[in-house]
Length: 157
Image 1 (cartoon, rainbow, N blue to C red):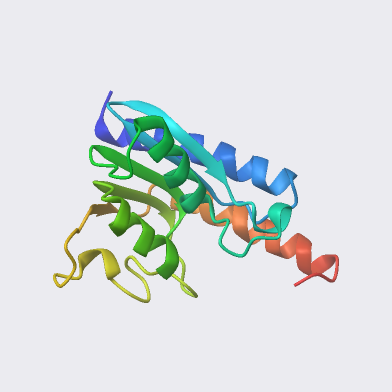
Image 2 (image 1 turned 120 degrees about the horizontal axis):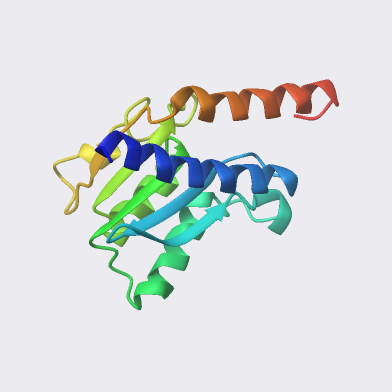
C-alpha cells in the first residue's frame, strides 16, 4: 500500500464523519486523528447540533484524541480533515502539537493553512506540523458544494 493509498483511506474515514454530520443537519466536515496507523479519534461538525460555534470537527477530534492518549500533547498524531482548517482550528492544532495535517478541499473563505493564511508554517510559532493538502479534494469539495446548494434551495443560509 502506498502513502497515497493510506492518506486516501483515512480521508475516506473523515468523509464518512462528514456525511454523519450532514445527516445530523450540520455542515459536512469530518476529521479523524491517526496515531501509529490507527484511528484514535473521529468527529464531524456539531455546531448546529450543539448550538456551539466552536464545535468544529477538528476541535472535537483533538479533544477526543487527547482523552484517548491521556495527555494534551498529540505528538505522533496526524489529523485528517475534509476542509482546510480555519484560524481557530489551526491554533488548536499548534497548541495540541499535532505532527501532521492532511486536508481535502481548500477553503477560499476561511482557510488558515495554505489559502488565506499560512499559520502552520509561521516560524515565530513553537510548533509547525507537516501539511499535505488536496487529498480527495474533489470529493471533499463536492460534499460541501452539494450541501450548500441544497441549503440555498430550501431558503437557508
